[in-house]
Length: 372
Image (cartoon, rainbow, N blue to C red):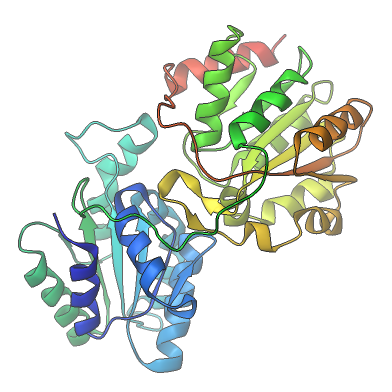
């Protein structure tokens, strides 16, 4: 395994000391080390991977130096446009290093949402003309070769990270939350208040896993929930598409702060169309909790005010159980587009499971429910 410190030292020796990206489970040890050891202006945890490419481009324009963009391979989809229409040699020819976690690598067990992306990870880079190396025991030479190639071509180079590549490192620089509610407790309180014909679209990560387990514990089945196990940041738009077609059903979005920030523009569409049956609930712990706990800006911004500004008709906030229960009671009589921010603690149960149904089974059960 590669020690995160040794890897970052090697990059810095090659002149790369600016980082931007979205944390990933395969890179969590590396991301945690960067977060702990670099000043905030040299490690920007971006809203999405395309933004991170823009940040690295801006860094180069301002300094002439090379930046590093880190991401999960699912983020390749978010970087295609800025890579090809901004930094490519046929446009502005801006150099940068990509460090990409390889979820869904063929032959390695992973969750279903990573399978297709894993199959096309290398092919997509090849299609875009991005040279790459898959890190192995010769990683020091691979880093040197990457730096050399970037310097010689003024181009982009990618280092691909397999599962288990980096040695353990635990994030030290964490703000300890004193908030009384855990995310799982808040989810249970909300689910208990749902009507029989309400449906839920839950975002990727821990939120969908905790929702699934609570439905299991209550023996309720899963037909009322669409578990958005991939496509981070798009749950609200899936819900909007449903709400507009099913105006007689209340549609709840169970969102996270990192997911909301990733594609915040979707809020403006919700506010503009303003379906009276859509309730957007954001479980905000100010962290990318599923991939190591690196911070977001979620607790530093006023989500209800943002929602109000883009057209949501009802906005509320809860930080404790009593307030949350009052807010949910108010929603029962509300027929306006609503956003509820629930501030919760970081962390999750260590024995938290994963959905045992397949995505296809989830989709079919959900569609059967909606057809009633």
